[in-house]
Image (cartoon, rainbow, N blue to C red; front, side, top):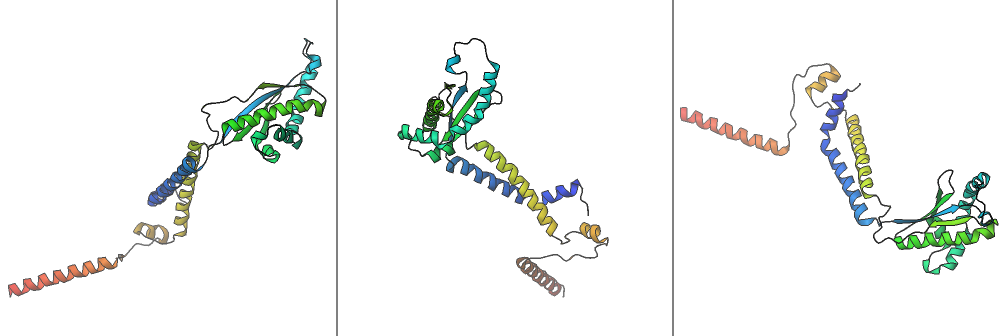
Length: 251
């Protein structure tokens, strides 16, 4: 049987407290985890430009073919940075970082904007200073090793990762986590409400009897709790006692 908007609203209103409880519990749990248990992660980055080789520095005219070649080389450089050849060199030259080449490969993220000669080396860590030191170390080692690997010298560091007194963490995004938790829990709670309504095949009101069976309700048996039954029995006995007393007085 098809339901209209009023039926959906009726189902939601019927189980509104369950829905609210699920949303509050889920959102509160996410907030506690985000603010108390999740450690902030910081990101530092350096920028590298792939430009003309040193033997072309005196040439004033821009060679478009050379620029296009450098842009195409960026994909190659992005792969070279993430190889043990570079990372092992970083580990050996900067032992104070206390990190392995495998961990470096996982930490370092290399990206570039389409049709530009600029690459970004980003590192995330629980300490911003350590992330900055790793990013700077990888950039310097890469710049020194490329001439030996590719037989070219066209790498320039645009900027190092600078020291920041009070850096902002890149994750967790606490407000976003709470917003996502609220939306997801709302969807789940409403879904559970409709599922429970779908599985509940009992007829509870006279309107439902008429709606599903097309028959009028002749009588209704009220469901009573044991304490209600005892209370009613007590009231009945008191009523009978008063009536008996009234009869005796009249006689």
